[in-house]
Length: 120
Length: 110
Image (cartoon, rainbow over all chains, first blue to last red; front, side, top):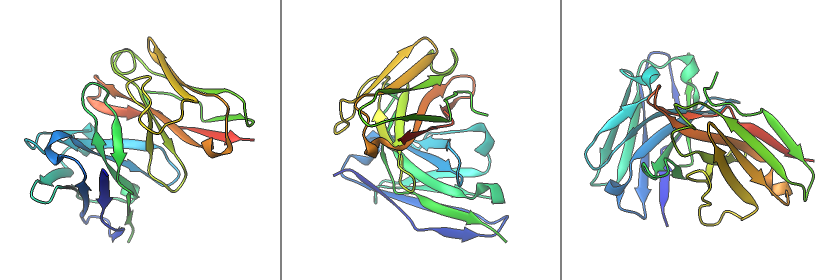
């Protein structure tokens, strides 16, 4: 079955970087964009960006441009999200998800989430 | 402050019908498909309604979606205790060049 399995929880100090992985299986990796969404404690969902594993094209929410890098490894069907210059308000659960495409604009398969805590 | 707005809470008793609204603008809901997500606290969101009104496989037909102009709604009939969750609408926004989520609606089954 289609799965997205993320790396484990991270504890980082302010100013550091974090890299979260999202290993996919059960479908053709290059056929679907991978998107990243985060959720701060007790808050709603916030879209960060997406990447096409086929050609590496990316699209970022403006507030994360310059601080966020998305990459993919087609040899392992894994996507990565790296967020730099971490602040306390970056503390959140970070989710990867599969984007269904421009017909529906939905995120149909989600990873289990990775808790990133930023604290001194 | 999200550009797509939802009521923060909704409630109903078992067997009732409830609706959750989602209001946006011509930049988002008015121009792009709306998707709905269900999130049980402590778990990842789940796609509940795709492309305004399409139920992914496995979603009960008690759930339905609709869109008119710059607003959308999610209806749940025959409300059940397992429907208690947070519900989010989402749509692409041309002015922000970003996917925008509503603030979420917490559904309580009384």
